[in-house]
Amino acid sequence: MGHRVGVYRRMDRRDMGETTEKKAAVVTGVAGFVGSHLASRLLELGFGVVGVDNLFSGKLENIRSMQGRPGFSFYRRSVTEPGLLPQLKAEHPHLNYCFHLAAIVSVPYSLDHPQETMDTNCTAVVEMLRQAEALGFRAFVFAGSAAEYGTDQRLPLLEEYADDDTVHLSPYGLAKYLASRQVGRSPIGVSLRCFNIYGPLQDPSSPYSGVISRFIRMASRGEPITIFGDGLQTRDFVYVSDVVEGYLRVACPDPSHPEIQPGVYNIGRGIGTSILDLAALIRELTRSSSKLSFLEERAGDIRHSRADISALERATRWRPRVDLADGLARTIEWMQGTRD
Ligand code: UD1
Image 1: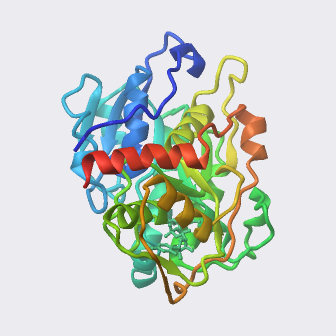
Image 2: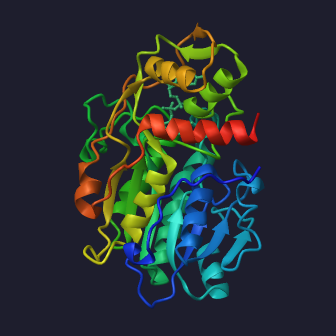
């Protein structure tokens, strides 16, 4: 456990537009799947990192390799606590970036706990944004979601399609939409609407875990691969290092794009893959003889989801680099090396 694969291409610090200014970032949700990758990358780039997580869904094992490293501190706190950012800034005066990833991450949980979801995924975000502005932060980057598009089936999904007429399927989608809208209007705010992220450190153990981590586990164990519905639904899968790179690009642009460009951007790969094709690819890569088991379609499941990623490409010259087969191979290597 705690083993890391080389998911990131070597990058010179100048790639991230490093100046002599000392950089330090708050990463909320630091013990989560994406937050822990982001924090680790920030440390590699020479940032100080103040990680915050209440461990509701995050896991300490995800940050164990960072604990004790110079420049990293961890606070077990909830982002709903009033005055959190000013307190952190008082203890770490160099803080000037905030990556806000902490959230209620389960859509089904949000249906059962709508108020808690609105408090955490919307009200607390807007409050933290206000504090970041008041404290003079350079950037506030928020983890939005493809769920902000609700039932919209105009593909590929353009950022402008999510608006006040959008029909959201869950408090999760609604809260993320409202928070993104607010963040995107701030002079320091960027919301990245994440499509289906996968990669090492994604937990396969819950029924609500991402489909890729679940399928790899089932295939590796020779268990039946569970397909909800006919398997022809499609998703836009994006590898975690590409998402981390996107977070960095919008917050710390390179020297040729020196200004952060506030707004709301999709981050995906722009390619739809059906769940059946995904299962076939994973069976092949794991050399598994698992059978497919077709189950009832999942309530609230979106049929198709695919991002238009041209806005982020134009604004930052970000490009997804890891294709699905490569990303799956890396994820399989990690899961088989540490889990089974
Ligand atoms: C994902 C995110 C969610 C986000 C949404 C935005 C995860 C875990 N969830 O939801 O937070 O709001 O994108 O687009 O990343 N499936 C199977 N068999 C399984 C598991 C899943 O067939 O064993 C199917 C599901 O029915 C679904 C697809 O795979 O059609 C993807 O499921 P999942 O990985 O849970 O992600 P989303 O529901 O797209």
